[in-house]
Length: 198
Image: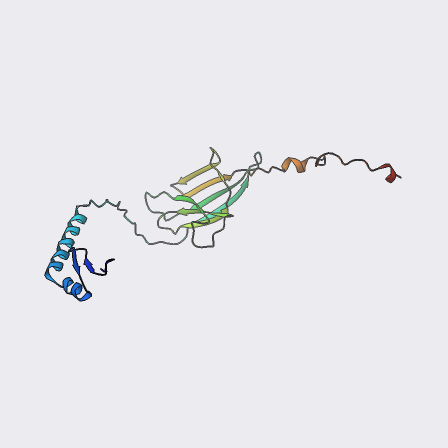
């Protein structure tokens, strides 16, 4: 490598060479080659001394998918609270033994099937050996309070149920529209001058 003085320097062997030919001859020589071998052995030993972190091993289950399960979706509205809710019934007649269906909410930005859209989220259902199915639902906050969100798996009929309600969206102008009085927009305008009164 050429240094600031214009000479060639081998930083491995700490030698200086007046011209490029001398430097190239050195790199092919015995001293340089033995220093290269020594450095490689040292780096090899240092890399073996470093304890590699143990990566968790996840066994990927392999199974043949047999198609999509049957499903039924019911839209509901609570007459008292006016909350909208959805009830999903998924039929898994050929589900594998000791498998409980799983569900997951996924944002529109996590999926890669459609263009991302913040107005939608996806609800996924999965159980072996069936394909995972997904439902596109409005991206509103889900009410997970007691009685508003529940799941149930019937092992005899092999049906999975999930019901959830959307939280009510507060409308800050709801009270304004329901009143019969007109809204006030500041003080009343002044009376017209006497010359304009007829």
